[in-house]
Image (tube, one colour):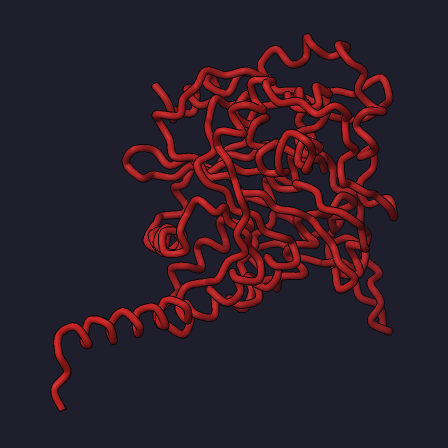
Amino acid sequence: MKINKRASVLIFVVLFAIASFVIFPQFEREDFNPENVEKISSGEMKTSTTLKSETSENNGLENDQTNESDIFADNVYDALLINNQSQRIDNIFQTYLIIGSDQRTASSSASRGFVEGSRADVIMLVLMDQSGKPSLISLPRDLLILDPCTESIQRINASYQNNDCGSDTENLSAVILNLTGLKINHFVKFSFEGFEQIINSFGGIEICVNETQREGYSFEIQKGCNTLNGEISLNWVVSRNTEVLVGEKVVGSNGEDMSEWKPMAGVSDLTRVRKQQQVIISVLKEMKNFNSFNEFFKFVNALEEAFTIDQNISILKASELLWSFRNSDFDKIKTLTVPTYNYVTESNAQVLILEKDFYTFLSENELVK
């Protein structure tokens, strides 16, 4: 039986559509209006009331993370924000915003506890220069900023909320625009629980540490390189009460741990940032191990559950971008954190102050000339 040319084209289109539906991830999508971000950043759009962050803390998991309006009084810290403006550098980079939300459900790891709401615990920028070379830059969640929507002086993660100005991502992007001079081209959000699924889809990731460490029954990681599952990896990332082994491991006759442990020195928000970068780079390195379609498809299925992307990027483009990282040398990707110093507020809250403006920071790291 002969099939005419028009019928052949129609069959091809139908098959391609079916294949695309099956192959490409069906990410959750979210509206994102760059024009709205510009208006928020300039102060053109403001909310009549300062809404509380969705952050809700319990179990002592996140000390000093209370209602931001109770911590920071108007006009008290203006001198501390002197480096929080940078010249526009939109023409140099394509900028992707990565937001990791520690939104927890009843099925969250028991060791991390249940907390209502969502928090921007991970805020990272992927800067793609004109040659396509990526750099990864972290903004600590405790960074002190001026929110152009609410006119509140607060931590940067408190700007991640829906209000009269815009969506949570638009409000956060407006703060980042003022802070860095970078317009966010596209964003991706992930939940910590979803990220656990991604790590488990690989069979775990490699994490290397300089000393044996633990936190209660949450995790214990031996000195050297370890393959960790998703739950242990994320427990390690969010740990605030890490202990390190003193001397050799000692196990009693009944199997109990008789070793000496001491609190790890210098654990802070910046410690968590370095761990976040290490985990993300370890996940990206796993891209090199895709040798078959079945392996990639398993990974895609994990992504569908974990990620939300903006409505302005197509599924195909997002998939192509992800696949393009497969041949990158991740050991040579610059992973940076904006320079900060510690500051304790009048209400005894610990925050981070930007030490130099963003353009100077990029210039010193040879990302701009």
